[in-house]
Image 1 (tube, rainbow, N blue to C red):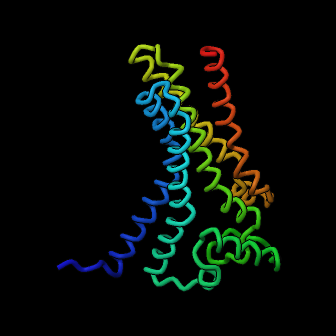
Image 2: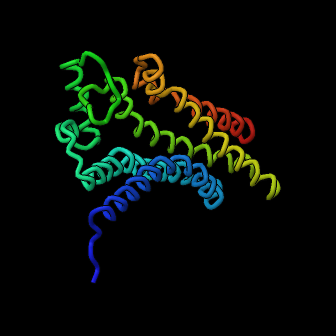
Image 3: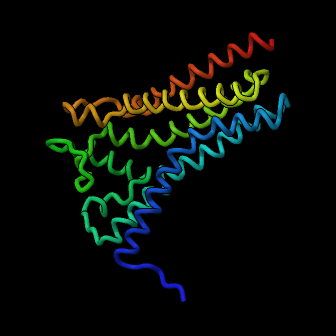
Length: 231
């Protein structure tokens, strides 16, 4: 007879689910480049290609947002609960889902602490800019997924006359380099490292959205090339 795991086994299982959901939510937007390529290969120059790509990117982006903003925080909370953790602030503000992050943000702004801290066991001292970054980052990642889908579509169309090997290499290079460029921009723009380094309170909203400049530039270049070629 099946028995639900308890104790250390349940904690390990909770940690595993939390890690998988969190990583999957983060990775999905990067995989959408390949999704865009596949759509272009299957649908060719159909008039339905663009709306289908947009719908596909929005759908997968929504899944990514749900996993990172809602699913992973809920599983993280269950993991800590399985360890018997009784952190007061976690009980006060609840799991780190968007509504509770907003509650946390409003509380910090209404009663600014004498000093800010990133400790998870003292969320009443979390910097407001970091809390705003937590709110906006999952949405920005979902938008990146949509842009990445369009990049995949354009890249597939622009390389259709390449040989099989060169085309595969070109698409792989575009997908990987585009993803790495965005990931690097996210790391550079993030507000946590400057805060830990010297207490700099970099805008969390700007930090979440400014990395999108990179994929927007890339998709603009691809669109410009496609327009010159086909118009």
